[in-house]
Amino acid sequence: MGWFNLGKQDRDGKQVRIEHRGRHLRVSRTGGVSLRAQTKAAGLNLTANSRHGVRVSRSLGRNTQMALQNGRLVLRGRYGNGPTKLNMSKSGFTFSSKNQLGTFNWVKPGRSSAKLFGVQVRGRKAANAHLAFMLVSLLVTMTAALLGMLLLLLQWLMALGSICWRLLLQIPDRILDLKQWFADRRLQRARAALPAAGVQQIAAWPAANQYAAVALIFLGWGRGDSTSQAVPAITRLFPSGEPSTDSLASNADWPGVADALESLLSDETSASNRARQLALLAEIGKAAATRIQPEQLPALVMQLDELALQQGDKTCLQERMVGVFCDAAGLRMVTSTGWNP
Image (cartoon, rainbow, N blue to C red; front, side, top):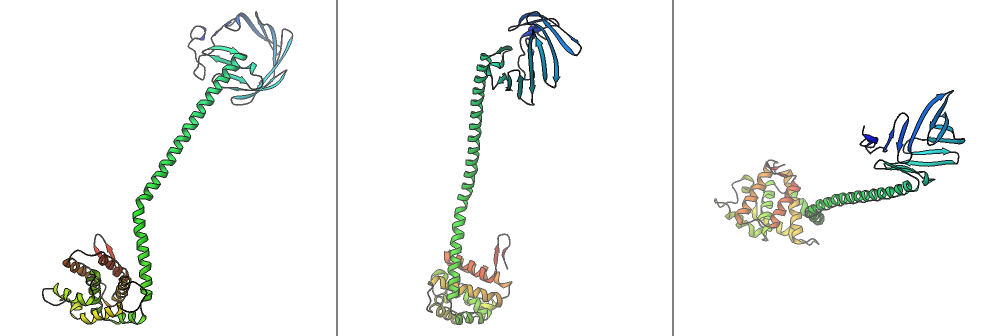
């Protein structure tokens, strides 16, 4: 322990009150130098002080004390848990709160006390010190709260920005999905507008003619030509001079299928020419799924894709036709293995 408690700290880590407290001698800034002696007799505490006189005190209960000092009655008590307590005296009740600076009396600020660097002050000086301390604490708290709110707002803005960025990245895909949805709706309306007799005619075709119909639509209409014009073009793609050595293609009535397709396309309808072409292809794909063996359908699509590349780069319409036919025939494309039924 240092001289006059210098260097000694309290529970809050602050310098304790600078004073000397011996068994009989006390020296402090406010109390001066005094001699003190204390004893107990008949349940009473007897205290004699060279500066303050004689005091007789007794505890009336927990945290309650009554004393007689130099003929003056003293009654005091302090109740409550935590930093804020209820104080009792002869003049009434007051509330006080303890903080890092000392104790502030909310009802009678003049009874406050404060400790500054180990120096104990009371009265108005202590009250002013507490007011300044509370003002600074309020400013610090408000600043911390403001910074916390700004940080929280920044986090919200970052989260909102992240969500907006993800949504922005999804816009191209959503636009494509929307376009696909409208295209599918137009295709459904075009299929519904097809004459029932034409749909029945397509369903009655043998597998060879359905194969030929898909090839003519894909290689003819897909490049903006008629199916009749596509017949000699398809013939030139095979070295043998025949449309195909495949049994389906060899048995197909290519000119007859071409004429039938052009006849179905020229029927009166409210749908556009391209929508009607895709609608006919969808009906042929649906019928082909029941006529052509399932294991032959993926090979058919891959063969037509190769034939289209021999003619040149595929058109956007041909790409669309592949999707329409596969959807109608119940095919799906798997990246790792190719076409799967």
